[in-house]
Image: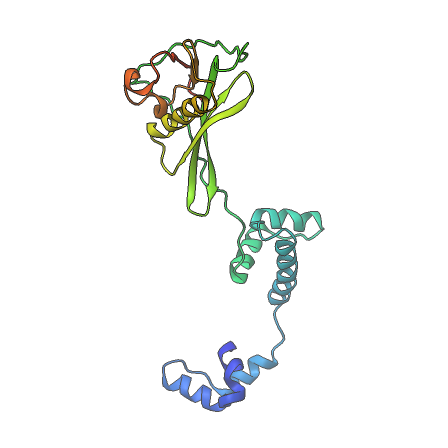
Length: 230
């Protein structure tokens, strides 16, 4: 019916019905006109009313509402309707809500690797700069995808002294952040002396590789806490 309506002004109803019948889709002009005169069903009327409300709610909420939230909003507004009906109409309208992305774990336990002792015991204080550095890394969404950012914080000033970014979670990411911190301290005339504690979690990213090659300089003893999700 919709196809005939769209092309009737150009080709006429009777020629369209004849061509459709010749190509295996039999429909007579009388059937077409009878359908046009028929009143819409109660379901069609109800669907048309719901479509207006669904479109409005979806647009008012920046296009992020899915069927469940649209349905709940309709119930709050006093419309008695089943959730499956909302799902059906949203499919027909081509509407969908924003989908929450898969949660990314930046810290996973590394039980097969040697773990450094926890030298801080949750005492996150320092009496001077370059005494205790705490390292961690997180992820951010970018146009290119997920980007992982590692950073090193000086506990004394709470300042980020080194950082690095990468699209993969490799040991080099956290080591690059540590190298930047050491380089920046050296460049500003405050080189790291003996006794600096470098504290991080015990995830696979920081534990992959042997301590002698991963922790530098040699005077920087590592410290690790239990691995917990970031």
